[in-house]
Image 1: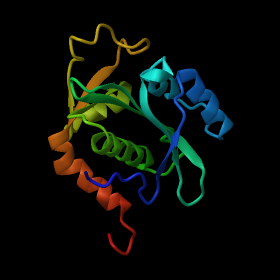
Image 2 (image 1 turned 30 degrees about the vertical axis):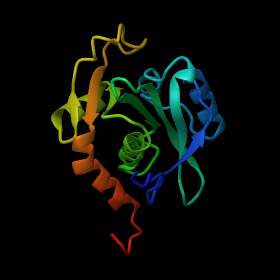
Image 3 (image 1 turned 30 degrees about the horizontal axis):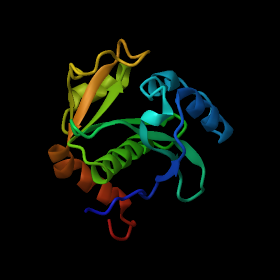
Length: 185
């Protein structure tokens, strides 16, 4: 099995108990991450039942220990070999690229720790448009027919997928590079 990286130079994933959407907002506020524009769009895809979470993490600065956000792996479907990834990081309150770095670390965790061939996630607005316009690893797809209904609050969201083979060609290398110490980079 490949090494499961849980830390880059700027982000570490610290495992936490399973939290539903309301719990995430409350606990993030307790840890100093207040509400920000777009928070509700990022929280809506989280499973309403914490039992649907496979793993959840706080995104933490390794240098300071400050909580930067929250990451979730949920709705694991071992039969269809897929999992949902959600990342909640305030892009405007953190250094440029930190939300992306947190996302790729979380996606890497999903592929290396779970028996899945695809990672799925929801996105809206400018984030969705950016993903749609730069499809190197990410493709927009209709949700599978087996998903009876979109999660509440995602009626206008776009559904995206990252396939394992594309991730291994592009994403995993990016995570290794982000994890190297500056002298090794």
